[in-house]
Length: 87
Image (cartoon, rainbow, N blue to C red; front, side, top):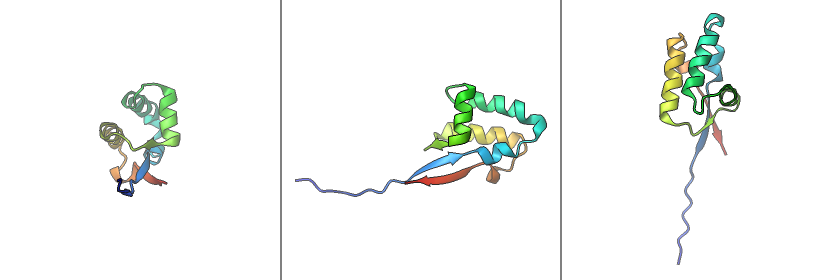
């Protein structure tokens, strides 16, 4: 006999395009290179995919590293991420 248990798990997609869009033009290239190194695997393609499509259930070390890089660039922490619930 099986007992059916409905567990509602919520998944979110995390986007950092808001924060990256606020980076001053003079720092864009330097910040982009740091973000490419922070996102694994390290390639420009994966960076632009992450920027455009976001992360589904992002890993905490990646979240913290991206936040750290953008805060160093002068972006307020509350303006970096946007979160969208995935159904």
